[in-house]
Amino acid sequence: MKKLLLWGFGLWAAVFAVAFVLFPLRQAEPVFFETLISIALAGCTALATRFYFEDLKDGFFRAGIQAGVVWMLVNLAVDLILFLPESPMQMPFPAYVKDIGLTYLIIPIITLLAGHLLEKQHTKRNK
Image 1: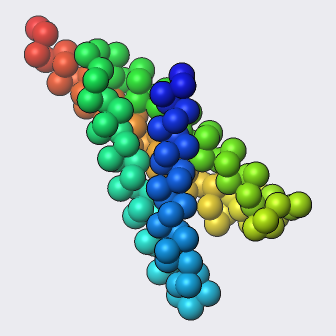
Image 2: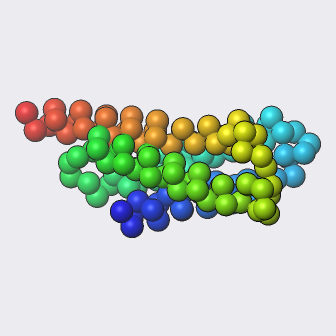
């Protein structure tokens, strides 16, 4: 579980770093900014998934579900600390969900599909 939590936080930190660099675009071109952040999230999730699955020998589908759920929850938890009222980047919860929160569904979609494909490939090899 510790490894999953670390990967989740690393994923959040990588996307946050991209957002920090691109932050000037948020005011000037908010739609472009959101698009780039979504691309960064998908790319970072795919990369983290690749490295997370590298050492696994089996149980890929289950691992994909676990990684996706844990990583998504870690990202949401860290964000909520930063974005809810009484925090540095205050944002009402409904606005957070619409603007940022739902985007994190990308994480379990990628990990679950990767786990499914690897499980299918593993099953074929062992027949």
